[in-house]
Length: 287
Ligand code: AMP
Ligand code: MN
Ligand code: MN
Ligand code: MN
Image 1 (cartoon, rainbow, N blue to C red):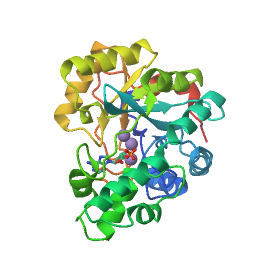
Image 2: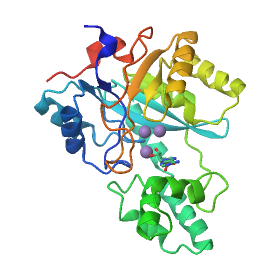
Image 3: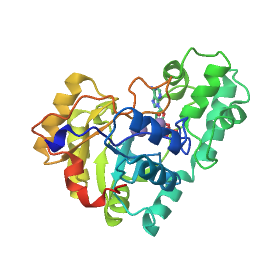
């Protein structure tokens, strides 16, 4: 079989970060949806890895360790997915802990900003949705604002309250690009630029992101993701070829109601690309 046709889903979130399902429930959903290679990639956190791996093994589902690291690059937040690393690696664990560390203070400042426009109690409100106290995120605030009736859905919350220039937005310094790539690669994994079409870089800035990522040892880019349009699959297939990057595929699933792309429900990678899993065969945890 053509390896690029494997139903790999290498990007999703559990309630250990800002998803709503447990790692076990995600494993079952991935299996039921026909996923053939799976990775749980929580934001800045690998606390769900053992549960995801064990659940995948019990279901006969091949698994790769995963995470999605928040990075600051040219005044924007960029996400770097790590795949196939050793989850016991100390430098990676310390790096992720440092990346998580500012989240609580940031959340308190977000709540203060929201209070100024009349939305009270947002910190406590968001906390009700948090599964992991070290990982309070904008998504948890979004769920609270939907609950209060301030907005119809989480996308509206982001647009009106949580993005740059809006009352609940707080600029934040995440990990450095080179550090995130090195934590992943030094732990035996492959670093992948997540959903590149979501960033608002100029062509020159985007070129700088890809060049510096490769210079630091990054090897992959998400081409087929729930965050890209069909036209963007083609754009980033070209960029993958230009930079000699491996191509990844992942739904970025968070929740059955909020996410428009379910686990495993993605088109195949364009055939001329080398899938990231071709370089990770030895890192796959097989049942
Ligand atoms: P944070 O790491 O706290 O900045 O939260 C980032 C998360 O917010 C992302 O991983 C998405 O899950 C979610 N998010 C970002 N932008 C949007 C949006 N426009 N609509 C819905 N969710 C979003
Ligand atoms: Mn998220
Ligand atoms: Mn992301
Ligand atoms: Mn994600």
